[in-house]
Length: 146
Image 1: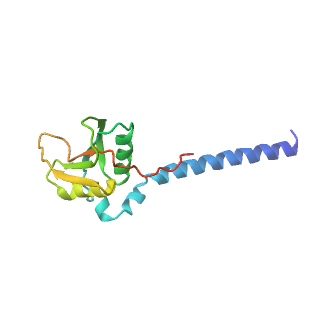
Image 2: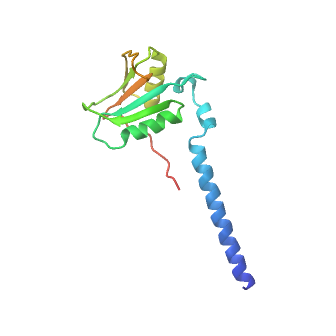
Image 3: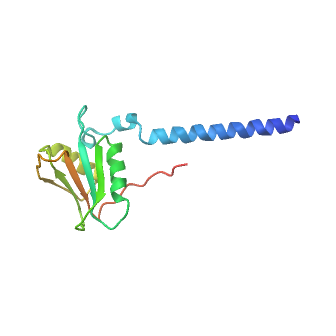
């Protein structure tokens, strides 16, 4: 093998390894605990508390509950259930199931403007909060994965 061919092969291997390292770093940085720790206090659950959330898509847009779950998880909420159900809604409604209005207000703040909060305590549920996603909710733009 000539010296020039070995040099080209070594350069290609280096570029592939560099690309793989960059991809791993970019993927870890998107949802790292350090990023969640820098969020404002009102946009994450209290320290040491597990706030269980169910997200229900009440629109005809496929995958909306999954995207909302990703947003809430990135802010430190424990999304234990996602799904779709009717009737169709225009606005997003956050239901406080465990009599913690501050938690529901935090979820509403994460989901953005136009989100309403109601208290509907239900001790028979395993959930703290139920989110009924409406047609007006727009998920944030997602970065392109390599």
